Image 1 (cartoon, rainbow over the protein chains, first blue to last red):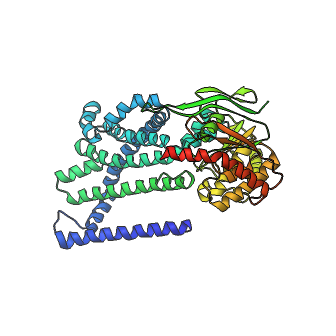
Image 2: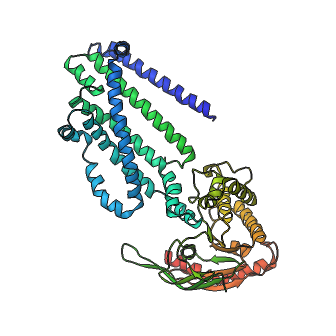
Image 3: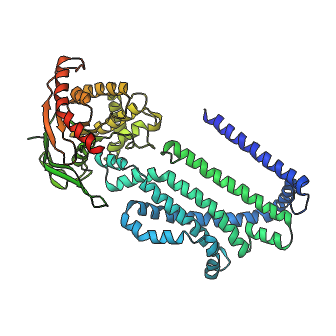
Length: 256
Length: 260
């Protein structure tokens, strides 16, 4: 199938899927529930437009997104080299596995209290939590990617005269790219959970704070605007990731 | 002096359970420059171990392997390797980029390495496929990339580990014919691992028949002196086939008995 048509059929399907989602929501809200506690999509979108005009929504959105991106980038930039080292060198793996295997079972949500005590309710605590939730998934996926490299790929490079550094740069790294991207994609999903939870508990702005305020002041429409924004934001970011994995997968060996 | 000499080589694999496995023991063989040496043996006889040792991917437990008088201490571009499967190809590189890999690592200029890679792609019959990725090519074509990738590096010898075993019968016969043609043209030294008598007699100038493993050695050597194109229905070919077959028959039976 030509790429353009594939793109169209993919997006056409999405458009239809989203349309049916909002239609079902509308029907459920109007005829099934019929309560102000479950507003139909039209009301929520009208409210969203108002909040966009006043700049409130963008402010919260930007606050959350900034935290996610900062923590996610730092977490990935730290996680990738650590994962590469753990996958490449057995002593490093032995040394660091206790850390990764211990800490990854302590959910980031559980770390919120500690983060707030340590770093206060400002940016630092949020970014710390996003780094925390990102780094282990990226490390584990990267390390798994390195150990999944076929030994013959390394041997072939050796027999072609490549040095150890060249093998790392030209064989191990590109062969691991799909795994790294998959790890980052999973981490991005977790970052959304973490940021909302953190902002619910302690923040001055952000989509989680918007949810909390909505609960306090019984602004049900605001709550729904925040929820829909989270969904759309997550969907968009994940699409970008899937697209980049797909683009790489055509070139880099697909890691299905 | 032989180009390659195995002196009393032993390879023992340690297993975590403590049951060591000795693949080859007191293994001796010499390969002369310009030879197409086929190492033939039943499955599990340690022939791939011999290739890995000579390639330098693994070190012998005892004994010595000399190449051009110097001991083999690790992999080097003196010995180009063609693997059985396609997992040694780089899926993120095109056919021509795969072939260029060795030249690129050595810092050969882009235009020169492209020109050299294209020449070898042409030699293995892949002209017009150079921009495709390995995943877009058939099994036979992928083995051609491997062959071109090894040849363009101009190694002192070529090590081939059952390179056609995973191909269908027609493609295999075709590839054997082309490899024979390339060897006639280049006269490079080849160590070719196979379990197929027919393939060994078709390609080899000398055949080393291995005993069933473990603790395998070369049971006997057969010089194949068939001039020109080798036909499977030829009397001479049949004679060699029978001779090798008689040597290997008992070993295959032993190998099967041990496996069951």
